Image 1 (cartoon, rainbow, N blue to C red):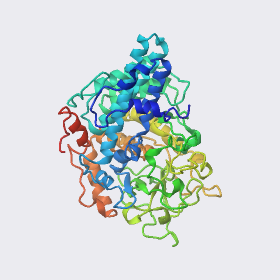
Image 2: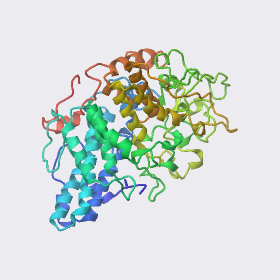
Image 3: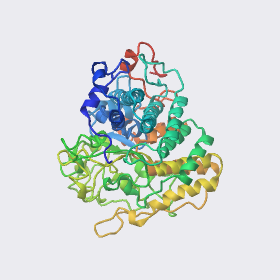
Image 4: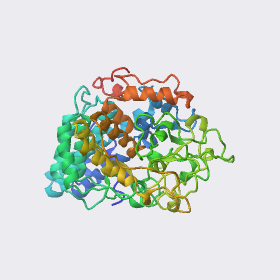
Length: 559
């Protein structure tokens, strides 16, 4: 089903837990009224899926991790104006404190998800005790354990030092543990007990659980274990790249062959028509009355550094070392009613114009992006807007909510098959298997080079000078690693991975401090910002969580 993550007020009311992780017995007032059967368990499980979209964290806890994963990187700025959502300024400057709302709400949402998964597992035990057949409950239990692993894993990459919460606890456990073994245990259980396919789209399968097990191995740098799982997915799994890159961000083509796991967003489905839409991107639409998303609110603007990364050489290959030596020309400081005559004519990777809105380039049927008219404060956020999360003009009122266009039904991709291929390419490169790494990268580049998937002018011609080709060789291991990492940046830009990749690779301090030094000449608010090694790789544990844990939770180093 398109929207497994539906709003069930009764379930959410019964299952709500204390936001600060203070664990108390749940549901005591209604215990005698509940019939523990398959239907009730499924309702609870649906509630556990529902929190995938980050609610009740609203736009402060988006599933896409655009704030903590992209704004805190070299890919995106907060955007908007300097005085709107000031906690995001701190995220971008690597100065988040223990009360930052984006950090706090993310913690609350993830551990709310853990709580709902655990309550599902408790209800399964009671349903079995009351005589419900085990067969379907086993699958439900595997889904709940997958979700428990998912929420803990997202927390692990954000804070590192996290508690692992299991069912039946009455006190918050310590976070001075390694949560990875418990996360892996849940994922392995899910792999062994989930079907390969589900009747309802959006539910976890054994292939989804395998993909997250591979991700867990990648974050632990256990490449041997990851290789085994990734090879199984690539050689025997159901996934393949879709022909056109933008199909991954077209709401009419959600749940395609490249989608491994995604948040199932939905609009115009009853009630107010938007509550199940993508609420995490509520702020991130271009600013202006004629812009998609109702013109709100101008956040999440691509950096010049990211745009420059899409430049290619005469052979159609990335400029791995020199991409930022000159800028793709832009309309910074030029009003929309003034002529812009310096549209960039150099070679570009076509994925740029599906990722970034640039003045003069066709914007999803809304006409050429008009420049500053769609930007709240160009001097603050720069001349670009995001694009992957926006609906086509032809989908206005159908894929976007008719009553509130800032909400839409484009799924939030959490893992795509290209992610799988690039993880495997990364391992090949690290192990010196250069040809194998190159072949996987080339699969992704070949798809991007499909001219049917280029952004087009109204007359059908390419909107820019797109030139992209496959690699003919990786001359050495260092080059291969650099090329694979660069491809991840191009392919997955704006999908919430960049910061966590830089941390995972151990290169965040040098990459991000170099970026700050260069980008601060364009975005003056970055002056004085600094990424502190051995601190900023992880976010602070929220103060509210520490205070309510009765001493169980310890703060991360440096905060």
